[in-house]
Image 1: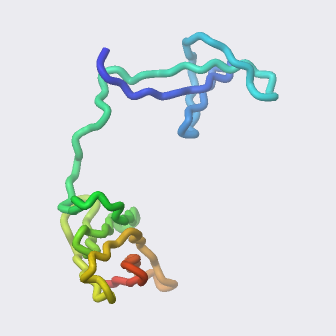
Image 2: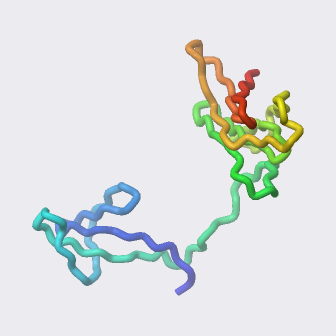
Image 3: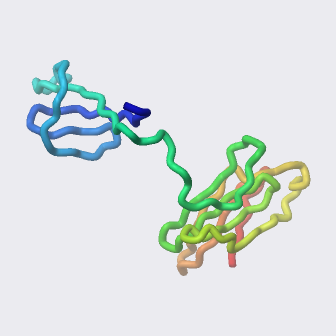
Length: 149
């Protein structure tokens, strides 16, 4: 068997299993080793399941032209209702992309005091005002900058 992705399930003795991700699975589980539940009086068995034949990482479906060769943690946010992604770039810009096509839709270059000294957005968030207008907030240096279109 090749590389696999391990998943740990707790079997509750009634045919149900609880995964670490919080989802519930039903069905029979095979495996050995029993453990007593903490204060519940139920018998629990743990079994490590491996998805055989799967790679640890899959090729990307969509690639954005985002740059981060510095290794610094740059901020990004996804607005699922509009299908937009906002990301801080290594040169201090804040970029907005289409989640569906990967196309760059907007590029914001902030005028921030000290921005010539390598400030990068470590936190980027979409926000909506009371009227539903969408904008992007970015933390650059010691300032929070708002970008709207």
